Amino acid sequence: MNHPPITARGAARLRVELEELKSVKRPAVIQAISEARAHGDLKENAEYHAAREQQGFIEGRIKQLEGELSHAQIIDVTKLGAGDKVVFGATVDLIDLQTDQEITYQIVGDLEADIKLKLIAISSPIARALIGKHEGDEVTLEAPGGTKEYEITSVRYEG
Image (cartoon, rainbow, N blue to C red; front, side, top):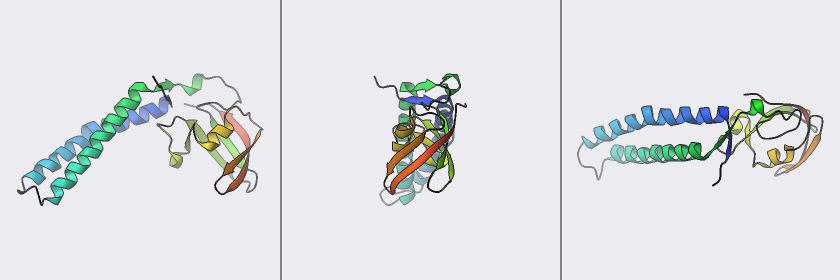
């Protein structure tokens, strides 16, 4: 059986989302369906159909989260002890060698990846290029916009 890795923080974030879906959003959509049903003819009731569609999305997400969390391998990154080597869970500070721009990413499981939060999936091209490297190493990455070169300035493991 496949056990995708996830950080303890990522698992907690997904559990919060699951709890909100079950305790807040699911009851709200059930109430909306009930109110729309009270308006009469369901064939031409747009509110009813919209609420049913929303219910389908909520139930699908609940099933997805429950399945993912039940099969995930939760890893406490603070106990990895990998030093300055980049492995799963590492928070990596980089400098773009062309622009001198600094950027920080944490390498996480596919389930919790969110580029807006600077959480990149271990399966992403940049994470694959970083894995196994050490603080001070330079990394070359072929990106859609051309070749990117980074220097790893810091590697740390934080919860």
